[in-house]
Length: 393
Image (cartoon, rainbow, N blue to C red; front, side, top):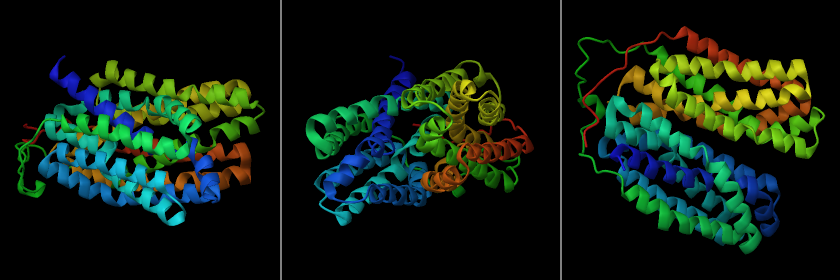
């Protein structure tokens, strides 16, 4: 197998495992975990929120470490942290050990999910990492498809504690060897000490670019997480049965993968900013279709939302790369995406309030947020990809 394809396959598989056993874990285990510990289910979700907030705080430092030392050592440590955090959850006897487990998982999420994978690829391949980033997100897009059934099977046969131990074991026997197989990279001085070869010919982008990208990612990830938490309830509020709501919700996952395939196929010929603009237009268009056509338009909404969400996940990796280049990518991207991690952590609670207050009308809030992100993307001007010296193995 081609070395680049093998790298994407190994890193993408490890990412699928990481997402399935962290971000997608509570959807299946929160209820039995709460019942087993004698706690309200809200306590479980609050612990998850705290873990996500911690992951946002740690992202920049993890990215800086990958800039200096490469992704291999960081990703190997996160495999051990995921295993330790999941084992702590399996041993939890009350809120203290529950929060301890989720805090360890939060550290692993902040230094071992997509942003770390993107920084690893940029550290290895420099400006040419766009295709590899797309490939990793293609595999990572299967996390819920694989993770939810596997968590459900382990919980049904071994209980929620057995499911946590099972995921911990998978990190040790699958995730750790995969991350250990990442190529070694030479240590580099701090990014600010590196002078990109293009610096005399292409000025750095204005400071506002980083703030605009941070807002775009925060707004779109807030909506993505809000839809993941509340879409079934809104579909049923719109007149669909539970089975119908689940069937329409199931369209989002394949649509996300289709969006990433579209990026890998036709859209990679264009500047990543054009891909991001197209993606950001899809959620508002889907809301208009749903509001205009009623239940009939709900399927259109699910497909458009999924397509846009799939492409925007890639944009989180490619836009910082094309505007700023590979030098110092990990640290800079860590700062740019930190607000999106905070927005992601708060989205279920805040959007739940909107749903309770306005019902289906909450969709206008989500459409407005993504439309504002689209306007910001139109404000930015495409630039030629920035090239630097970083990217040697």
